[in-house]
Length: 255
Length: 255
DNA sequence: TACCAAATATTGGTCTTACCAATTTACCGT
DNA sequence: ACGGTAAATTGGTAAGACCAATATTTGGTA
Image 1: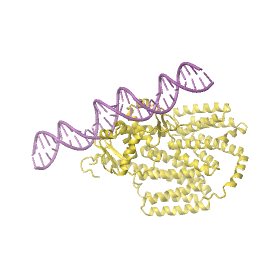
Image 2: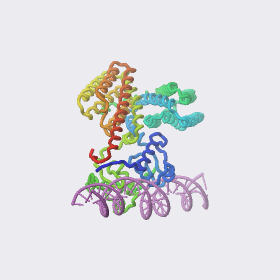
Image 3: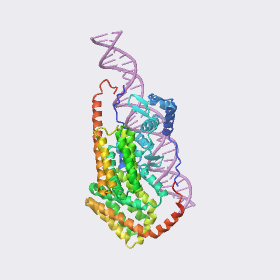
Image 4: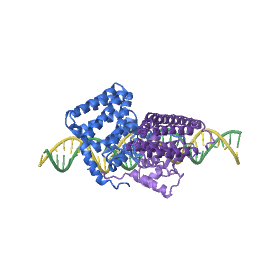
């Protein structure tokens, strides 16, 4: 009696299409979807069908709609990684080393894969973000530098064409931004740090553009190593003070 | 600030109403919902609004619609916790490939670091979890195997002494196990898969215990490669079985 | 009478159009 | 330059129509 010959529903196909765009990074968290009328026309379906698809995504928490405001992509995918880490950072503050070590692996792999797989569109985006990075380091705006840095590394992560790596990279960058961006500003205390950082990014970009995976990985690892070393150097005195303070608070923490 | 005053949407209210009726028992599993036109009139809403609500329930797996046939209540309890990644894994096959490629890097790095850094306590725990793994594969209890597998990889992740990596490794493995047990039965298509899996885990364990980082990485990567190949094979066989069944949509359909 | 096949009715799937309500944007006057 | 109101934008809801797959009825034949 149950001959479940599946008739594909349009709303399901549309929902999958939108999901894929979110997974692949065409739609990032925080982005606003095109208006329903436009999107329906672009996808060649009616507005009710598109709405059914959007409702599905909304019920999964992937998007959120506000009447009159638009429909926005949530950070549900990144939160899977980000939230537990953020939690750990709260309970165990000296994870900077773990974070940078972990990031060394991620960035290295991302650069390697990006060098193997980047499309022309990826390279165009890399070129654009790298240009913005260069420009930001010409000024002295710390926030702008941080944003440009994140944008560049995210572009690398997306060019690696592995959706897990892409979203993990986003979560990791956000984690770093939220936790040590203040300290990142002190990198400029090292003479010529800005110039070195730009040249390191250039090395990554060039290796990816020239499709040299091993060189790209090396460049990325060198970059993270420099950041790690410079951070450790400039924060040494601060770290000593923090450690001393921490000793006062964490004695009974074997919960 | 953002005034996130939620404007109640009719489709949400209707979905809640229907969900309540199902949970209260007014609509039992297998029951057919009234026709959309009737139900919409009864609830005093338009048919599109009712349809959006039904789509939400369908995306949760609580109801199932067949064109021309009606909409039926399924027996899916709201057990499936809402991990967006879990959902994505089910609907996007290429995500599984990305997942395995990514895990190859993660597990390889975890094994390498574990071989470099494992303490005696780590090794003791590894020995214990590996013993449990061997024992679980002697039996035929899928859940027990899953738990033992997760415990072993968790031990590796912890022995790597990087909390980010440890957490990620465990989370990804859990995701894979859930996905496999949800969408396939088990990796039974390959004969002697169990024995091979045990020997692969043994190789990882031995390399870590003997403090051979490169060997540990290789062993872990070999393990993931095997899982990837086996999974692909299983998927092909499942696909074959489904096409065969589809060809058989004549009468005796109580498969 | 029994049974099978075609005709009919039912029902979910999709589209079009229209209007409402909340938000955002633009513009204008002070 | 600022603030507030009007207009445009955008999601939310409704109504009606038609299509496609399924279920039911009907009619004819063995």
